[in-house]
Image (cartoon, rainbow, N blue to C red; front, side, top):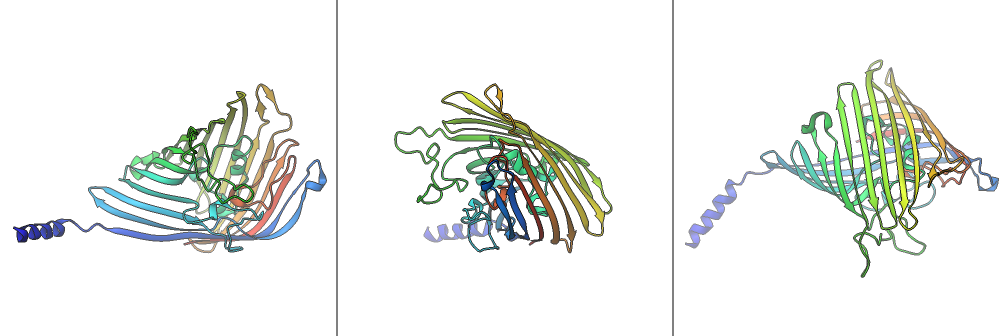
Amino acid sequence: MKKNLLAAAVAAAVAVPAMAQNVTLSGRATMEVGQWGASGAANGSADFHNRTRVADTGSRIAFGVNEDLGGGLRAGVYCETGINIDNGSSTGQAGTNNANTTTWCSREGRASIGNSLAEVRLGRQNVWWTQGAINNMGSTYVGSDTLTNMFNGQTGVYGVRLENMIMLHGNAGMGAFAGSQVYWGVMGNSGNQSAAAGAAFPTPNTTGEAAGAGVDPRGKYQGFKLNYAAGQLLGMVDAQYSDNGTLDRNAYKYGVGYRFMGAKNPSLISAQAWNKDSTAIATNVKSKDSGYGLVVQFDVGGGTMLHTMYSKNNDMKVGSATTANSGASAYTIGATRALSKRTHLYASYHVIKNEAASTVGMGGGNYQSATPVAGQDTKAWGLGMVHNF
């Protein structure tokens, strides 16, 4: 009897097909030498003098694991970690902690299961700020971009790279709608949060999963991204909602784009608009902001592409009143020269012009060397290199 059971077990093990597993290592090194400064504050002593920098502008390393489970089903793991190759630490240009380089999977980490149509992803994931083909400048090409900083500024959103998330992600089987997402998550213990003086990092968010005894764990967020790409046309709609017991936030972003052929490679023109609001639950006072941006990328041939963008934030509203001089405008111009399919050089110039009551800076990717105060204009230029592997 025992021999028969053993034989049956061996036969069953042999009958199970071997599942293919694929492990990949990838990443990006992106560095520049240039200058950053912020000037124009009402109190001139608060201005930041120009400083020459050798700056990391978004380097990262990632590993992924994918396993074919048979029947079209697959499972995966992805871990993307930010690295600062300028100073070998977790601090950015301002000398403050960069939450995206603190530990493994600091940029993104997830486990997933699904098929060619869609997959369920669990973990810390990118939302809201990602724009796909509508705007892929940033650290991909020219180190940073002012447009992304503009629509993340003013009243802000709960977050752009969020913890404790469950996401339904559309894969290639979704056709023109591939990359669309629906997500929900619980606030708490996020690398996005800053530590209080003397406290361990990260500081727990006590309204979500880390809520203490007797405290209602109210901190939740949810949202979606609808992507569209077919032929020359691109489209995008983003929405995010959050409630931490103190603030109710709503954020919406819309974009359209048109791809056309440059001298040799595809080029792009796109437009985005956004509006956000934040309501203080205790007072029921709502703050609102809105804005728009334009992006143009044009291939001029010879491996050279020109990049430019312009964005505008309108004056904010608090309650029924408009806050005077709270708007801002910004632009980025740059050029890239491809040396291979993986490596290019770039030159870029970024400007954010704040009105007297505006404080938008280039905080994305810890690019700025300090946080500007009200009314300051940020200016930065850089000559850099990007290598993808």
